[in-house]
Image 1: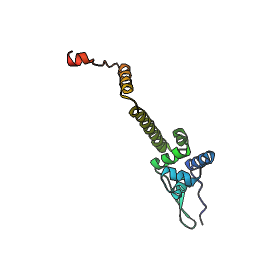
Image 2: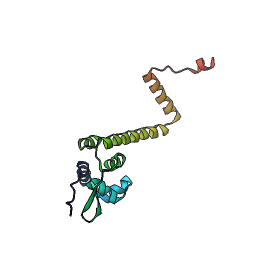
Image 3: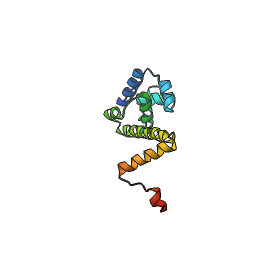
Image 4: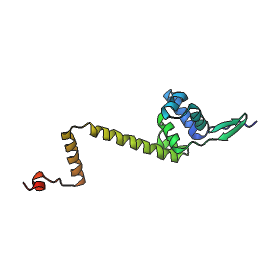
Length: 138
């Protein structure tokens, strides 16, 4: 019978982060949108093929990024444990979430607030706004 493999560094990181967050693997996997079994396979670095037979599991970058986001792991921490691919995916997810929050705030603005924001952006970019008189010749 083969000895059970040690978890990979990113698995240890995730497990410790869940403990720090007082979050169960069941709840974390639900939040990440994967099965609890898959979560455990990726965190442990293996799956059991048959009694005493272990197959290595290296979770895809996107999946590991979702897991890290739930566990509160940073891109830097993922890089430190050898998963720069997942770190990049996590950073991209964070940027997308930040952009979505910004867009939501813009959608909630009144027309006057939106005009003021656009004017401020134009000033920052050095764009001169066309006045109504110049546009319509009045």
